[in-house]
Amino acid sequence: MDFEAVAKYSALHLKPAGLSLQYGTAGFRTKAGHLDHVMYRMGLLAVLRSRQTKSTIGVMVTASHNPEEDNGVKLVDPLGEMLTSAWEEYATRLANAEEQEIQSILTEICQKEAVKLHQYASVFIGRDTRPSSEKLSQSVIDGVSALGGQYHDYGLVTTPQLHYMVCCQNTQEHYGKATVEGYYQKLSKAFGELTKQASSSGDDQMCLKIDCANGIGALKLKEMERNLPKKLLIHLYNDGTKEKLNHLCGADFVKVHQKPPLGLEIKPNERCCSFDGDADRIVYYYNDTAGHFHLVDGDKIATLISTFIKELLMKIGQTLKMAVIQTAYANGSSTRYLEETMKVPVHCTKTGVKHLHHKAQEFDIGVYFEANGHGTVLFSKAAEEKIRHMAKEEKENQKREAAKMLENTIDLINQIADRRVIDTTDAERRAVTPAGLQEKIDELVKKYRVSRAFVRPSGTEDVVRVYSEADTQENADSLAHEVSLAVYHLAGGIGEPPQPVC
Ligand SMILES: CC(=O)N[C@H]1[C@@H](OP(=O)(O)O)O[C@H](CO)[C@@H](O)[C@@H]1O
Ligand SMILES: [Mg+2]
Image 1 (cartoon, rainbow, N blue to C red):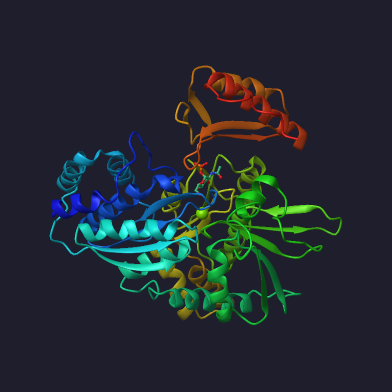
Image 2: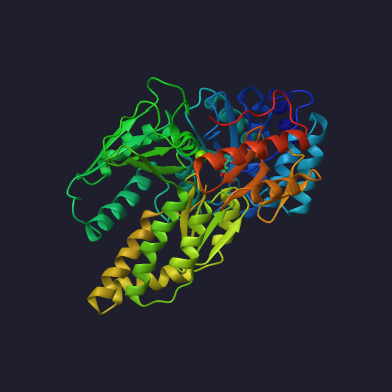
């Protein structure tokens, strides 16, 4: 390793004194001004990971749904998955290391992980539209270069696009062409064919209003539009030309406030959706004729997708094992519906795509969604081969058609991913510390009907998240307030005590 080059570049990307960060739910996230050294060091780490896996590794510069002033970085593993957890730990150590410790940490990682120093290294880099992202991605490039790695800077891309490129590159383009154009072509073709096969009444003209959160989704949809079937009319809102990223818009805003984003007027039964800042979340919504707002969040999307797939599986007569993976944030009634009515097994994991993705890989078909709209469907290699074979060779027309629909579904879905005093267990549904907090929450939950509540430290923002569910909106709000007061008192809250939701 050329430690001289590492040190020389490192001096250009100094760590602010006393700063300590953690590779959290989705990489590092904090104020953009604190991240220069982290970016440089993640460039270094990506080179080591690339040498160890003998594959291309992705580095995405984004802070997703966080405010525009924040930024962040996440590493993408060879098949487009999130970085494996052992390496998250190295990432944290490297990010927090003092200048003089960098060399020894790099050496230690190489020894532990048997990294061959002369192995070719390749890193794909992408970034979102934040004003700070361009400079920060230059710092990643410095890190890659310092260790003699090659890089391809894709510039402005969505998180799913970068995951796709990495997967294409490492599968010798079996998954698709490793270009933005290749991405549009693959997805648009599958979408066009699937909508032809699955057409239903009223679909001659499909309209969709899209809130792009003032982020990258707007740029990329504008590029993709020419590939989409003519009968799909898309209208973009919050396209970043006027307002701030994620401000009063985007998937997180719509999910949390249960209302449409700023700047998007909805007429009854118009179909609308919202992305987040790096376009890896989507939630749908509409107003009914009485003007009531209805959200189709990740829980509902997972239910619809698994219903759709289950029907097709029945048609092709295959007994492939399907499961839905959720987090503690899934509404209890969606879990009950899936298990009791749909008879689909449901599993619960910790928050963050990486946990859901991991669990979903255990099944022939794993449908995973976070309530906030992050998610996808994974098909095992064996399931995919069976389906593709039937789509080609099956003699019975109906079965072959159903298999083709499943095949198009596979191609349409991008199968890749993409406060600390409170400690939790049971997929984050119970708090272990501080003492007495869980008992207090249990006591409060008992006061309300069909209620649930839990708390956990956020891995992307400096907050404790409080979740509550009850028979009415008022009761859910009141339970949330009581739980947040318990957190405030028992977990050392700062500032004013939490106020009731109005
Ligand atoms: C409750 C919630 O929505 N949490 C989000 C949020 O993580 P936190 O660790 O809760 O800050 O951001 C993650 C990355 O976008 C996303 O995966 C996750 O679902
Ligand atoms: Mg995101």
